[in-house]
Image 1 (cartoon, rainbow, N blue to C red):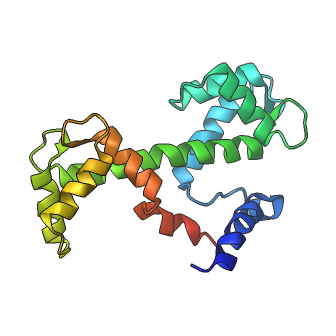
Image 2 (image 1 turned 45 degrees about the vertical axis):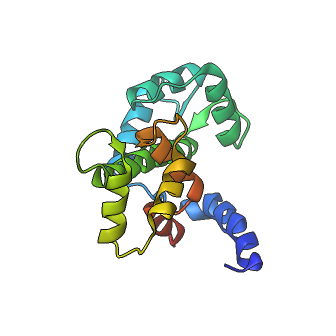
Length: 187
């Protein structure tokens, strides 16, 4: 894309998180079930029904949704979303915070699904042979040298194959995660 467009994208991202974009409390990238799940967790831990949760309540809510979060990370998250500086988190703030977290979880799951398509012999690694087969199926005319080069770039532990973590790291870095297109057109 052109440099001008690239400069626009952070602006668009910021516009999406402004209160106006919150609209009816539906966030881009989350299903209604996920939002419902997040609301239930929020209500559950808002023990005094004040409409907001504090640091301690937040930690419990995160754990209930399956996230282990360190103290420091939690503090930072609160600072990031606590727009009114109250030290408490209201539901829209909580939703925004969890949207990012849920997104991370989804992305990893999606990428690992792709990994399993490559790893057709279920060895838990992508070998040269796996990669060659996929390239051929996708109609990519790549030389053995190019394929080996891809493996060498990804292979961090030097075993000549690509494991799940190595694959995940590449997919994240290249940014051509199949989900990106879906997430970008949230209008």
